[in-house]
Image (cartoon, rainbow, N blue to C red; front, side, top):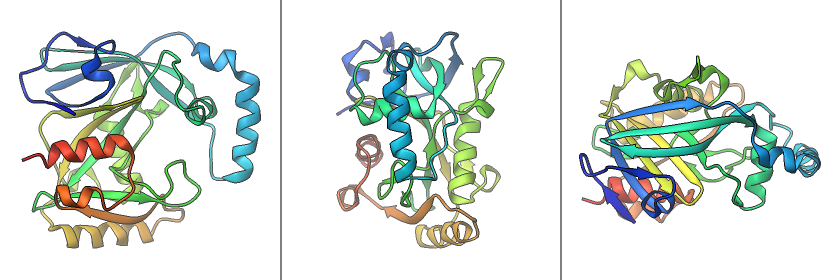
Length: 252
């Protein structure tokens, strides 16, 4: 994995091997927009997508076919991560994912909330059954939805704050926002994360989150995992991008 620090990035794009594979980029700003046009992959595979969706709905009735946005192109220059997204639906994304993310002109780009305790530990959520990442531990996060877009511009801070609140019950006002953004690339995934810092130690913060989750009618998280250092990373099943991000955060 290649690690990049402040002020070291310039003139990088989606075609660069440095971004397509594994990297954690510390950037000062993001400029994210939604482009016009439909996703050609969805149109080409509409019949397969419809059949796959019907089967998945039988297996997981909680799934909902809402609007999502996929990352079409991105570049990095002078510490600004610039990207364009395209609008599609969840069932088309789910079919693409089930096929192993074949080349389709997009990446799976999404917002993430990295929760840090007073000691600097990272708290992950483990998703409950019936969701697409069930059983995996990851930073609260998810798709860029219609509510996150205004006049074609994506508010990634709003994405991470919304996912933080929906999944953990924590509010951005109760935390301290970290500097800049952490952009993690791992295969087809591009996570755009904001760090949120709590004054609570990790055990107390975990207890607080679980209390909040217990009050939700249909919680997305079934547990909270504390990662205190590199030795804890391999102890839990997690998506590849989460492993890459944590390995960078605890590299020191």
